[in-house]
Length: 482
Image (tube, rainbow, N blue to C red):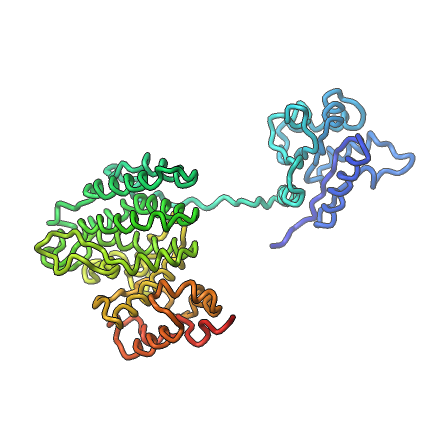
């Protein structure tokens, strides 16, 4: 960034004490050191100079870009009573403000409050925004002042986007969970004794009302209906993930793990298991399958973010009781791999494809990662952990199903060690995360990687996981440092 012109700033103040004068000099000096031509009468006036004329010229000079009023009790009294140099400056500033001549040219710095905690400011400035240095971190307030002078606010207004579909859609579906969500969020933060009960109540209502998203008319525009339904579900998905984020943030995951596990078991009543309500007789994913898949991965991502590795390990070790209709069950208990779902490529690819960088479904997942407490990189890490755990379970005959890490296709062309495994070069850190992988030692991991090379874990032509698996887990360096 370049600054076209050096800003000129006149500092108006009242001599009330030596301590206050030191503050004024400090502000002025640091402004000049920061590239601002700060003008102070103490520096400019010499014996014989006319102070009144100088002050008038400083306030009216068009080359002065900003005027700072350093306000304390003495400044307010002299400004309001039109006494001395401050009084003269105040008269001119008042007229300039009321004439609406670049109101942003003037700003007050507060250095003293009255007995009621109200700032001492001149009457003409009482309704305007000021910079309060009273009982504040000096460096933060000085930066705020500097940003105002240069016209570079800390918070830049973002560009306007387009309203999400669920806002514009008049047929938006409401699960009726908002009130319970707020109660639960408040209970978690306050550590209320009934918090687990409130969370279970929220989950029960969520699952019960999820029926409202069932697509009943399957005869026409089915692809569009599924995608539209998934878009409508985003606020509900995000609401649940916000609760999980709060649980993990307040280190309560061990208390809630059974309730979270039950929630994912209950949601399986809507999922396809050998018979889809949209595609009878098939395993093709529905809107319910995809939203459950996203919620599961984001739950793991949130837990990893807050280092709740034991909770992740427990969730991936426990099997899930599947509540699909009995006639379609080949087994009532399944591992976490049951939640790995993908939209049927033949029907959906052209609808969800954004570009040719990586597979359409990966693009779809990345685009849907919005308004969440974790980013897509966190999703990728969780996805890979689930894949690694799946590999371990496959090679130890715990499962026969595959977790295909769809999000990892986004790494194509920039395969690198994932942050979690980069940190695991430390033996201490590796000992923390190994529970998620279902292994006991580094040798176990090395054995798994060796066996993995001989397997074809996925037939997807876009990526060769056998080749990159070793690089992603950072095997050569993992657990090598004390």
